[in-house]
Image (cartoon, one colour):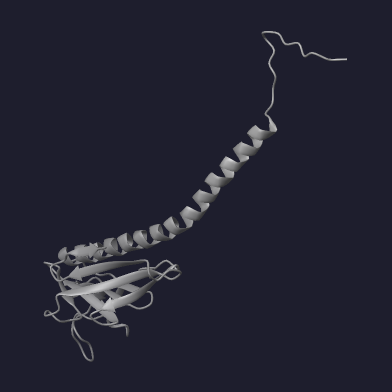
Length: 190
């Protein structure tokens, strides 16, 4: 006996064939794999790029504090205007915004002093996927901006023309970004 499926104009067959399901699942798996594997690298690069932009914004904040001769409320200034505002970089992950007290006993003007003579404005967190791999002209570099013109001085020496900080991914040290600061307040990242 042969059975014939009768269909009418209003009825239709529902469902998917096995081939349609297999092809659809394969396409979804391929696209999902591409997104997951591609996103890992792009995500780390995004972290590197966003941290560079954050550091540049923090340095601009320091320049703004210096150009406005803003008083510093923290210790040891208690509302007085500091000699300068600055940023300190040291390997592998130290970035400190500070209020420079100027010269003093055992202190060089224009350089960060961790013994409490300079006031800490902010400690800038660096993402744990990154590291500062290079700081020049020395492994720990201070850049200060003196009020009211916020002219940059690197490591307390007006003769130095620029400082360079290089950040890299810890998982892939070949992926780096370099931030260059010069004494006329230009900041460049590449």
